[in-house]
Length: 108
Image 1 (cartoon, rainbow, N blue to C red):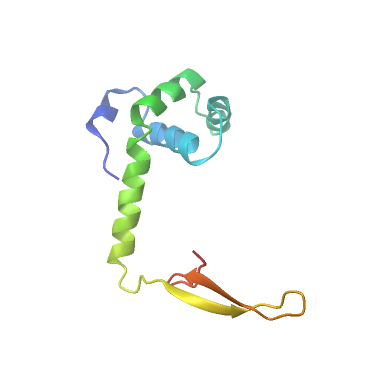
Image 2: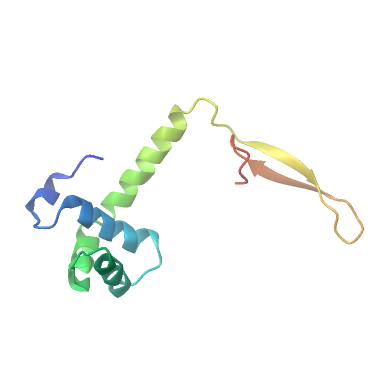
């Protein structure tokens, strides 16, 4: 991933900043939990610093991930969705269940 120009002015490496912001944005963690997780990885950062990074870079990193994910899925030639039909037995009856499935047979 390309580094934003504003990351080069920080003392911490861009990878640490990205990790801290992504931990706090993608997982339901408090800032102190993020601080503890980074401390277990031998990175000493306070929760105030993580909050500052989140306020400054929080919206930027997840939007980059979404853009890259959509571009990757659009580049994949077999990316399609379709409805799949399943016969389910419920209370001695057999109704059909319809659900959306992607190209890898994952239920949407």
